[in-house]
Image (cartoon, rainbow, N blue to C red):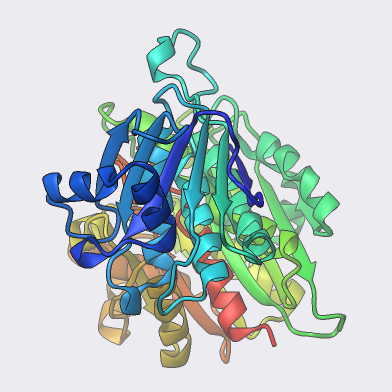
Length: 495
């Protein structure tokens, strides 16, 4: 779907959208179409019991006195409480309503819209919401009925001078979200470690520097934890770093994002139940989010130095697979007793995080992983879990999440939990008791964070995929993490 900001509406019949607030207070654009329709808008608002709350709608088919095929009046809520999220919700509502209705063009008239948010910003965020909500993954659907196919190709916004320039930055972020959603949606026979790396090659065109390690290089570095997970698969593992430096200073210390990239997770020898195992194609959601965030940062030319690292493996149960009870040695020399081969993400992350610290010497490391089912039990699908060793970093991430709607909830860590992963025969074991499962998983990762490094772990198992429609996404991959990481960088590491 193309987003445009033309000077005037297209003359051909299409969907025309105007806004109104509480009490049916019409914007200038709505007043104009009400006059042209001889009061039809006002009558429809009264009949439809329209109260003007954000994204409330009244639709008129074949409105009198207008060339439009359909007229939609959509609520914008109280003007003094307008936020970017409000206008994103409005744009998303419009896009979802008309995506497959048979119409090809929508025009939203923002003329004279006033409120707490400047008009250009409001229009840009409205467009952003429409762009995010219009995403569909229909690549493999070959027998769709015509009525279910998307028809909407053009989304125009008029009456908002300066909005196009504002939207450019948001379009870059939306492109990153789309990349993440595509990666997470693809089946595991299409996206596996080698093809994931291949799919990232076009990031070079944005100015991102790629570094890729193969199995032999990782073995030489001593990454026994990551390689142990991969040894049961015919798909060789990869470690990929994506570096963007928009500061102009080659010596600037980077912020490092690390993503878990288990492209399919059977659980290994500790095999998962068959029911629902197909969902484990999205166990690389952390790597997908990091890759999409790097795309967004580079596409909008962020004035920051950021490195994204993804550990890419497939966890399979063949005759060479890692066994429960095996002991492996991580890159930093710690030995790990593998109690459960389905607790594999932390084994991938510990080597990836240590390598990232050794190579890039960051002051801040944030990892993202679909790490535990326990976090879903704790938080459902409304928040991702935040574990952090620094209060300031935790506050920065929480604020970023609240701002963009990708919410975090801080969880505890501490010595009492750390003792639960002490091993009787090695330095550490990869799982603790059943209780506090997401916390002991975070404690495991923490043991591989260097002293003085600010670190946060985001357990996003409940947020990367949705079985229901959300405000800015359809069912399926949500793209969670891209907007959060972009906002975190924009608010704290750009001048």
